Length: 86
Image (cartoon, rainbow, N blue to C red):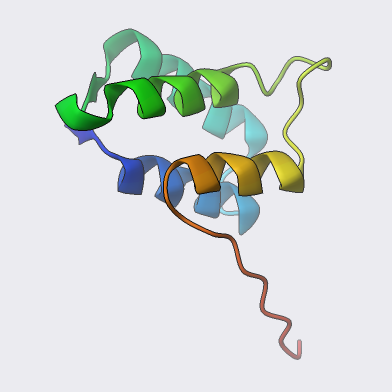
């Protein structure tokens, strides 16, 4: 499967929605860096973003909301928060 900007944005969104854990996101990123096939016209951006996600489990790096906003911005997306009644 070819990894695109949309693929990575979907993974970040799943993490922010608590659908996947940080560990699962990092595992996916590490696998993508080793075995993934990045879309040819997006290799530089995708490898930079995915490699940053891959080190998010290291205390010195982590993954904050601001990090996610910046990474999504590099992919051409923006994060938005909706507050709804429980």
